Length: 453
Image 1 (cartoon, rainbow, N blue to C red):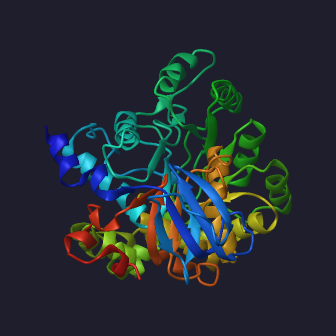
Image 2 (image 1 turned 135 degrees about the horizontal axis):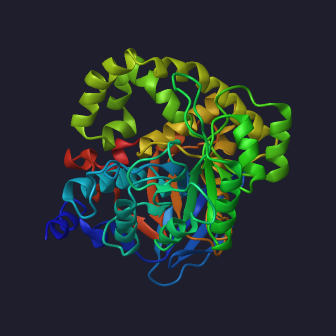
């Protein structure tokens, strides 16, 4: 009953926030996510949940289609975050269906949708919780960004990422039993951790044996499931790649990457999540906590959380040695990302956080690190689809792909902050009524479209 009330009130229901019909966006400048130059005076027509037509205007619309005037506006694909740990589900107390946990997760998911991010991949959470949230989204019971999830992290006893919900593997073939149990939950990907710490302020811990990692990767791949690995240095990234990993969950951050590693990333075409925001956020909270009072943060962050960041957490981070270590190392990771992008490798946007505004901060850090804005848009769209193994059906504005679209009031290829100037969000062909999402901006009576400009 409590969950039913929550869905009917705080979530406002799918019917209240979706407007269903074909949509024709006319005379818009198209930034299709592939990295190609923007195309002016384009028409994009959706049919059901797919993109039907992408062509120079005019395009004939079917009867009943909603027509959207795109003159002076810019259309990009729905953006994605492929490294999320959804709030509400971490820790042993998280229970699926608990109103407090569900509400925290739903508001985070809606912050992504409000911010133009139509897909997220949760890469480690309490399995019961995150698959419950995924079920709510897929069944249409909540208005939400699209949820993909790995469930529990696969790790070695005593290694990084253990805790409630983790899939612990210590030998082969004995590990097959617990892996089969994890696979039965139908994860969208698998994440393992390949990290012994011993850097920054972290003491050494146990490392997953490489032969065991090879067995785990192969077993998941044999079940049609892509894999990603938590790494932080080049040596472990290389070993994971040659063990067969499909993607990397982080960039190299412990030191500048070698030129040969940049060439390896080009040759292998292994997508790598960027996750610059998580490290930079420690010192940002310490030095500039006022960021929570601006733009999308103000619109989507609960006032109690914003106040806690400005007071308690800011004071804590000032005394946190890890915060200052990460401030030094974030520019190293930014440069490694820039070199991979320039060298022909594949970066995919990930934050290691749980909010739409943080994903926009990731875009800012990519561009301030030297990546051109149009490449950053590709990193947040088509490259994320490649990370997920979904580039055939999503990630760019092309015919027959899923109709995830974001209409902007300004050009993000001239200033990446213009990606925040959101006029309209469309998920799977349905226009999202951003004013009906359960977010602080809407409880204040401020229109969603006006607030983000």
